[in-house]
Image (tube, rainbow, N blue to C red; front, side):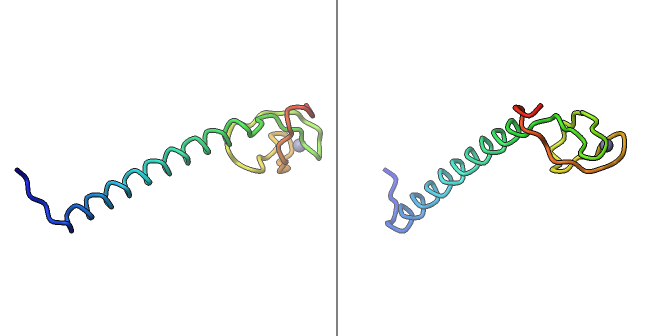
Length: 79
Ligand SMILES: [Zn+2]
């Protein structure tokens, strides 16, 4: 039979709890990042020259390929 002290049991329980909480946090961050990646629209319309273009990068203000103006992403209903 394996004999464990109370200190070892508490340490094992706390370690297991930390690992479970870490895995839950990583899972939540993974799904949050995936959700935000999906939410970001790819299509943009340049506020300066009116060019409609796509930018799949996660950059918040992608530059227009025609004039270089940095533009905000449009919601899919605007396009
Ligand atoms: Zn432009």
